[in-house]
Length: 270
Image 1 (tube, rainbow, N blue to C red):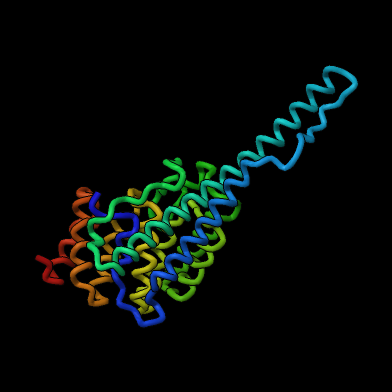
Image 2: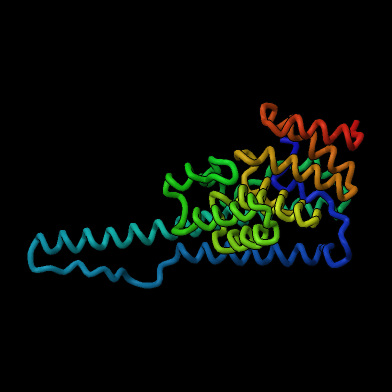
C-alpha cells in the first residue's frame, strides 16, 4: 500500500506551537512503552488462586465451580476489550509518529508502509454504517451502553447545522468511548463540523484521525477525500494532490473518487 495509516497528517505548516521536535516524539514513544509494560503486567499472577469451591455435596461443588467459571469468563472478556482498545489506540499513535519522524527527517511520506498492529494482528470491529446511522453496528452488540445514543445526538446536531455543538459532542464522544467501532465516523463528522466553523486545520486533523482509525472502513474514502481537500485549502498543494490521488488508487469504486478528481483538477494536480 502506498499510503499509510499515518498518511494524512500531511505536513501541516502550523505555527510554532503546533510543531513537534524529535524530543517530543521520543517522549510520546516512551508513554506508549509504559502502556505496553502495563499490559504485560496483566499476565503476571498476584498470588495463589482464591476461588471458593467448597461445598458439602457434589451439587454444591458443581454450582460453586460454575459460578467461579462465570466470574473468570466475565473478567477475561473485560480484559480482552481493554487490551484491544489499547492496541488500537497505540497502533494509531505509532502510525502518526512514523509520519512525523519521516516529515522531520525530510523523507517522502507517500512511501510509508501500513503500520503493523501492536502485538500482531488483532481482530477488531469494523464500521459498518455511514454517518449518521450506525444501526447495524449497534445491533451487533459491539457498542457500550448509551454509545449509539450519544453518537446519534451528535449527528443530529451536525444535521441541524449546529456545527459548534456537533464538534463538541463528537469530541466528547471520542474521549468517552476510546476505540469505539464508531470512531472513524465520529472523527469524519467532527471534521465536517469544524470545517463548517472555518477551522480547516483542525478539520484536517480530524479527517486524518478518521482515516487512521480504519483505513479500509466504510468511511475511509470520504475521510481521505476530505483530508486531501482540506490540505489544498491549507496551501499544501503537493500533499493534497498525493492524498486525493490515493482515493481512486485505494478505493476505485467509491463515490468519493469523482469529487477527488474534480478537486485535483481545481488544484492543478498533474
